[in-house]
Amino acid sequence: MKRNVKLTLIACLVWVAIVIYLTYSRYAPNNQSMVLDVEELREIGALIYPEPVAIQPFELVDHHGAPFTDASLNGQWSLIFFGFTNCPDICPLTMHELTGFYSALDAGLQQDTQVVMVSVDPFRDDTAAVAKYMEGFHADFLGVNGEFSTVSRLARDMFVANGLMPVPAPGGGTPQNFLIDHSGNILIIDPAGKYRGFMEPNIKRANLKQAYEMIRQAL
Image (cartoon, rainbow, N blue to C red; front, side):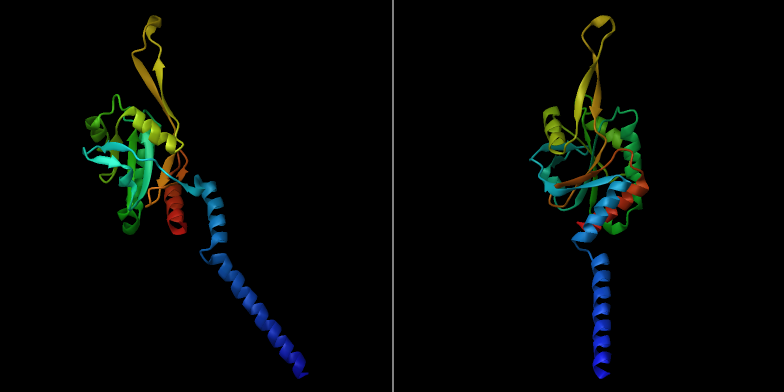
C-alpha cells in the first residue's frame, strides 16, 4: 500500500516537472519562441534574415551637411528607406507612416533608433533639396544623399532595386527627363551596422511598431 502511494507521488511530481518545463519552453526567450516570432512577423509584413548581412564601407552626406558613413550605423538601431524628394506617392506615404511610428515609440526605444531616408536621385536631390523635404517629417530623421554610384552600391548591398528610366522626348529627340525606379522596403540595421531584415512597402504604422518592438525583443 505504502509502495503504491509512493509511486503515485513520484508520478505526480514528474508530471508537475513536465508541465513546468513545457510552460517555460513556451514562454522563455529561446530559439523556439524566435521561430514563432518570425512567422508572426511575416504575417504583419516584416522579414528577418537567418544571418546578418554585412554592409560595405560608404561615404554619403546628411541633410545637415555632416558625413554619413557606414560608421554612422553603429551604436543604435537604424531604419533606412530609399526614396527621393520628387516621389509622388510611396515616399511621402512611407515617411509619414515612419513619423507616426517613431512618435509613438517608448522613449527608450526612440532614443536608440535612427530613421534615415537615402535619396536615389542625386542629380536633383542636393543637400538643400533633401533638407527642405525633411522639414515635413520628424525632426530627428536624417535625409542622406551622395554620388549615384555610392548610393547604387549601398542599395545593392541591401538588396534594394533602383534605377533611372529616361522619359521619351516628344518627337523622338534626346530624353530631357527621367523617372526613378526603386524598392519601397524599410530596412532594419542593428547596432553592429549589419542588415537584419526589412518591413514591406505600405506597412501601416501599427504593424510597423508591433514588428519593430518584436524584433528588438528577440534580437
